[in-house]
Image 1 (cartoon, rainbow, N blue to C red):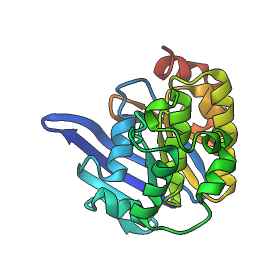
Image 2 (tube, rainbow, N blue to C red):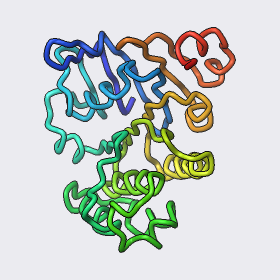
Image 3 (cartoon, rainbow, N blue to C red):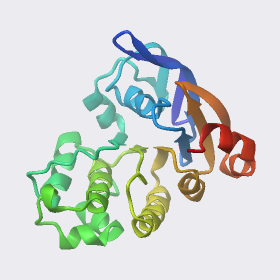
Length: 233
C-alpha cells in the first residue's frame, strides 16, 4: 500500500471531526472518498497532509509513519495536495505559479511545465495571466498543474468537480486518467458519485467523521439504498 490510515481521530480544538478513520490506497490506484458536506472528507485529506494533526491513530506513506511530520516534509516525500479552494497565488502569473511549486518541493520527475500544459492546453495560452484573471475552471486546472509540478507519487484532490461546468468536468475526468497513466496514485474527496464512478475504482463513504461504506465504485453505484442514505442531496 502507498497509503494507510489506521484509526485516525482528528479534532479542531474541542470539536472532534474524525472518529477512527481507517482506509488504504494501493500504488497506482484511484480511490474516491465520498460524502456530503461536513462528513469529514477535507479533514481526512488535511490530516494526511499534516495540516490537521490527528490526536490518535497512524498514517503510513510508503512504509513511513508521517503523522507527526510537517506539511513541507510530507510534500517532499511525495504527496501533493489540491485543496477545494485551490489557493493559487493570485498575484503571480500562471507560469510563476507552476514554477514556484517546482522550486519549493524540489522533486524531479515526469511533470514539467511543458507536460502540464500538454495536459491542460489552456494554461499555455494563459501563462502570462495572473491568477486573478482566471475563471474557476482555469484556476482548478492551474491548481492541479501546480501540484503535479512537485512530481508527487500520491495526489490528494479535494472536491475537484465542485462548481465546474459539465464540459470542464469531462475534461477533468480525461486529465485525471492521464495523470494516473503517468504513474500518479490518486485519492479524491468528492460528493459527486457520478464523477467518482468515472474516475475511481474503489470508494469509501464518510458520514459524521466515520467510514460507513467501502467497496468498488461499481458495487456502490449498484447499491441504491447506500447512495440514497449517504449521498443523496
